[in-house]
Length: 230
Image 1 (cartoon, helix red, strand yellow):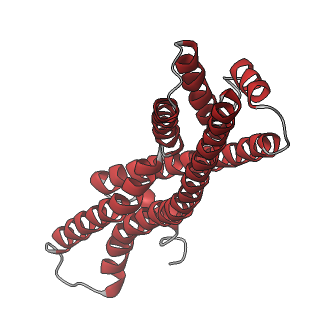
Image 2: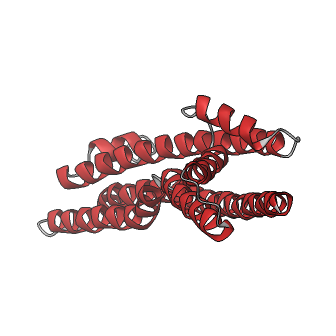
């Protein structure tokens, strides 16, 4: 009896539709785990790059030197460094055009940093919607397989003269495996989505804080230059 109700036996003896649902859910689960590990690695890398740049930024290095380094290492830089580079690039372009109005310079730098921030957040949030979809849809896909399997099982039992628990149990167990696989795919995706959403919120707050701090530094520099000019 134990051998007949083993998971492998139940999967192999399930109906074609239930087996197809199981295959779909296994593929979804594998894709979900791949997305989880990829996102885990990406967020860890983003945090490390932001830490490195923020340490350099507050170490006393001049803004021009930081900008030169950011421009040189554009492909390997993190979100915070690219936001800084966008603001500095726009700021310097406006200065080259002989624009000296502090408000115009600051508005241009802030707009450039805001646009860069949105681009960086789009990249950081990629694949997050996939995990949300897996977490919400997989249980229903598994439930569809279960309902179909139970219907198929009872249809087969209709022609029998005597129905006992031993004749009903295998068919129902085969169908319930589909729900189990659906939950196996959904639960890690939901847990990972919640964890990543929280981490991404922290990254966004940190980037926004840096943008404000850098804007304040630029504004102080403009004030000092205006005072020295007078």
